[in-house]
Length: 334
Image (cartoon, rainbow, N blue to C red):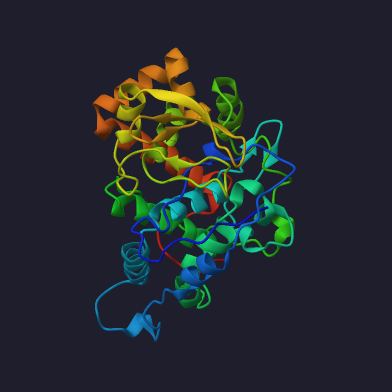
């Protein structure tokens, strides 16, 4: 699987990335080789304040407040909110309770010898996203304060609110995988493909416990971030403000005209507007089905309704397969 191409350090969108796996690249036999050195260097260059004995810091902050502050500092420095959301989504999104069983948020992507750490859909997560969080993980996970899986969920939720989105309550207790053997067998049938339509969306999301309204709400995560052809095969930003979490995705779907095109380097089909923003086949599918389209119209007209439904669906996504283990308080992982 090819890795992310390097980007300029000065770009304010240096880590803008796709958010939801609706952009998973169609399976292909050949891949384009790109240089990963600069991205990896950038991901590991960020540092957080030394841990010390945080519990005796005397600043009145709880351990959770310290972690949240460090995540916010990372977001401010790197503009990396979308890729942190994508990390949590792909960690939890493999869950299925249909013909495919199992899967849960367990941070198994940390292992790249096999399993989820090698899935094409996870390109850019195992090096860039996990690398961005490494200083925070070194500070808190190594100290036994929080698991990697909980940190990934928390970082995504902090990112959503940091970019203007709703507050999402994080519960804690996700255990970390011990090795790649705790991966699911494949991304196929678990993470949706960007080049497929209505029936595919329902086939993938229904076994996770999501109905049509949930599918549209989760698709609204495309209001931030974009696609990189080196990772997903698609190329472009969904909205004109990719670091603002609002309902622009839905207003764009209804108001902009999109023309079909093919990404020359990868052969992947997508659609582009006159403003240069994109939609995938899976995005435009939300307009083709009457049940989906009515929810799109509702969210375009009422951002607060979108936020409420997104929080409901997103929280269930993050807790699928581990709900019985979770608690409200931050405590050392078992």
